[in-house]
Length: 374
Image 1 (tube, rainbow, N blue to C red):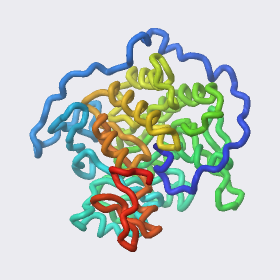
Image 2: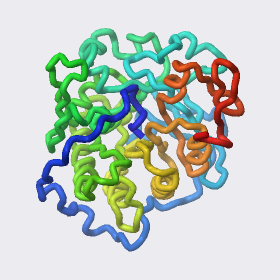
Image 3: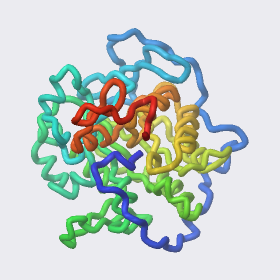
Image 4: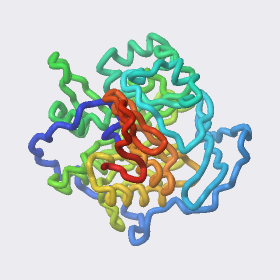
């Protein structure tokens, strides 16, 4: 999830919970007509398969994204995702360039080395807005020009910093206010409108709606906080769409929330249902609120539920996931896109990912797909 989407330090211990205004726990009126006795689903029809190298056709309601499905094996699929800065073959892993650079790798290497040759990378909205500032990025022609990158970029919304920088954050219905982690005393206000303005300035091909994120590993957190966050995420989504200035060149994805509540009619179902009601304006979907320390069983249950529900003709992005075993399992469940700081952060400590596992600088295999976590 967003838990590793940005290159932050480990999440700090959360501050004591604040009382929640009861008005933010009220079941949304728009969901009262949804039948929650059945699983939420867009209705699964066998997707039409498109031959590779077929020219894309961008529908009127998705002028900057076209997904072509080439092959399907159960839920796993091979696709081409056409975006403003070129096509991407999926499943795809996106390396994380938090402040516009992949640590340890130049843009030239990332574009030209056959072993890499990436079509998309990720930048972090909070960090770019905090320093150097999204207006500075825009004055250099956007992040593509600033980092000399002629392929696609995805930016997160800054939502994960509500987990990783929680002790420095104050979350309200308006948005979240962050104290500068460098100790300058400055504050950065991030409302849905601010997040979208920053992402419009940055110029990414895929941008994320600001969501209210609660760490999935905080089992001591009262259920009411997850209810508040799930409903608020939808309210903030509507504000994001209202603020979005470049819908013809930047694709705005919402993020499914709801904690680990996968039961029938539970919070994940409710989040999915609110997005289904808005599907005509949504080019693709993200699954968030995971990879924060929950058990693998809980993690995979959420991914399975979301992929089973989401529409076939739109991309599915699982935020902050990059461990080899997770990539294999979640691709089998139907995920198309991933990001994580894991490969580059691990490399900075002398560990490389090899064909059969992680290999330290001394050449000793540490772990791999078959023995994850040993």
